[in-house]
Image 1 (cartoon, rainbow, N blue to C red):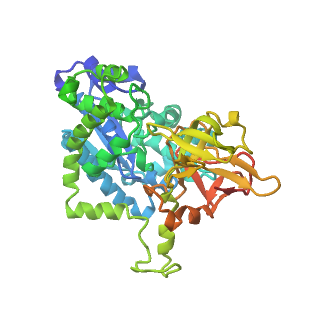
Image 2: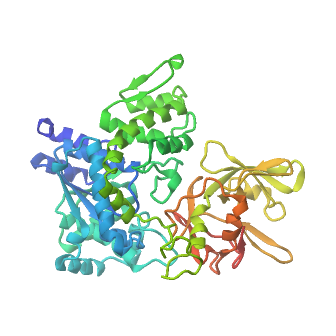
Image 3: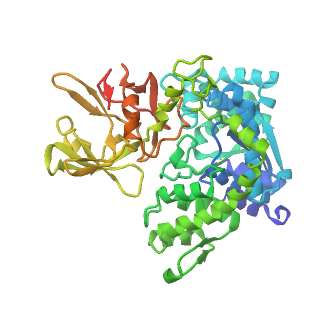
Length: 535
């Protein structure tokens, strides 16, 4: 196909559905002379999920346009980014990524023989590369390095030096992979502009950059490996896919932050050129769309029901996942998966009935059972607040936690926070407690606050990072990958046992056992209650 395309047609195919292109004229110039060389890199951290089909479908476009494409498994980057991949697991994670990325590409019909696969440490530990890292670090300011990695490198209160090296290494990769352009998400824009600014200072060419939009996850926020509810894993069963899509944010007529609709736009249409919405004959029967704008228009006009959209995406998604699931039924790949991503809840001391304080330096069984990842804490937005009709000391709040309907929360904040100060406020909400009636009204979640006992008692709601969105998951540093319980068993007192170690630090940062409470955007704080308890 590529040989039949003009340079302008190749450019249109290369850039379709991208949010931004830096260096368009350079790309057009190269296409007049030869095929374009592009690379896409992925840090081998958490398990890839279905949002990875977005860059995969774009890589298919690059190949159709005749590009020479390199896929970089950035294992060293995975370690530098706050050790998201432990050193001892780096090799296993690379092997897992290689197998699963190749399976994804095969499932969408991309010929692997036209791709080049490279592992970062195959060249990033060489003498020449290391010297260039030192040369670059003598030019890049701490401010520029930190700014470049702000949306990619995990942000913590006491950042490691490794996180500052990350953007520079990614910039150097462009030179060492000998490409004309780098492709990534728009969240990497600041790294791309750092590369454009500093590579010429080392005597290297300035490259072009292609940026995909960030596809919303199922909760309406960015799809993330560390947010269990925001993503569908590539190896999820059909039952799990159905369950997660059923819970996905897909409000009738709402085309903003709609992860289901975005999947249709950025994966299904580029791959198939059409999309079939399956409907009951009494509602008009199946309808085949050949233009995404028509799908979006009909959904916005509520001519396509969210249930029909989800069911249709479920069918299409399972067709993509079936060959990947089948490949990973092979015993050696099952073993690789378990080795690369060991279950953090399993007792490391190895004894089947091991007791707390068991030998071998392992985490005791009781500590595993009390992992803070069992708590389903989310960012919420207070959409309405009023006095409880039967209790002047209680507020009745409606809080958006990223679900189709806001949750009703009854809280005792009347004495501490003015009603108008709660309205539209971003808060933290514990969502998997058993609902309980409070003065006749069922409270469906708990609003988390910091407090200090005394006369008078002082209470403040906890604050998520700026620009947070309803439904974003809150996790404890070091427990990012654990899955929350669907419902905490009140008889087991899980919340009560974990709550004892929830505190506010002297820097007003929320912590569990001295580990920070975080979202993907940063740490959880409170305004003034240093040393307070959290409940």
